[in-house]
Image (cartoon, rainbow, N blue to C red; front, side, top):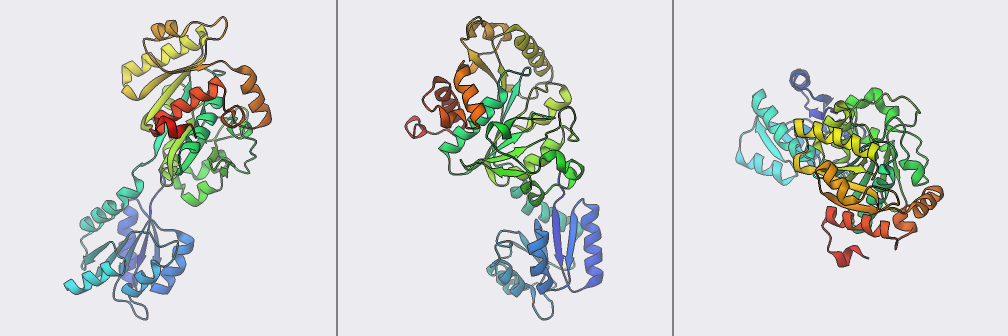
Length: 375
């Protein structure tokens, strides 16, 4: 998981060193500033997650520093904890009035300080986003087509940010399906994944004309430097801005790739009505029954339902012991056309039965009334 960064602002060099050491031992990255002007400059480049701000400093005190910080776009929402030897109620009130979130009197107990820091950071690092992962029981069941179009459909229904994460490693096709050419992928950041922050992730985000944020995982044919646990770091960052995250999880059903997906809100297991796909799905479901990683958050999706020669949907459900949440009809002609044109099916064939089925699922995810979802 990416480390959180704390800025400490104090004109006392000994206190800066001591507090910096305390925070580093607690697992934080630390950046320091010895006066208010330096702090305001560093906020723009360092983008700290929280600021510890001394009140009594020469030239520009903590109150004025905080007041100016709140006028900066980069500093408007950063939690600020003021530190002061002054214990008067009037000082505490003034600190809160100029924009501080908290006020601690010196000398500071390290346990209290760390507890307050965690309390202020917790809302930032909670996951407000709704995370939906699509996982194929095997390659070729249509996960990418469904993930791309589900993400576009969700974006059409909401004003909030929607992100589409290509976790189909080592090389996914989300970008090419949307006619996008990313300059960088997550694979390029693999060596820095433990220190991943919003600025680094921004390098691999490509904005689709629909407004969708698209993040490509890798582009090598047979290898990736990314590990399964890197997913948590990526979602930590994405969840701060995106209200919905759709993941193309490919067809990696090994336990080490399934376990990091345990944080998602819904896992959609995609199958097609043919025995190889169902056999692999059965193995995956048996593993889930033994480990109960997803519980009632796992749903069955039957793609290409009703295709000529395919196993009937009811028999698929009986074989797997699970009722399908959605059945997507076969529409190979529309799918092929949309892929070759680099335009989503939802945009290119809005009235097709497959598009309507995808939109119904999107409507369930965002809980939009049917009449609004149709617009």
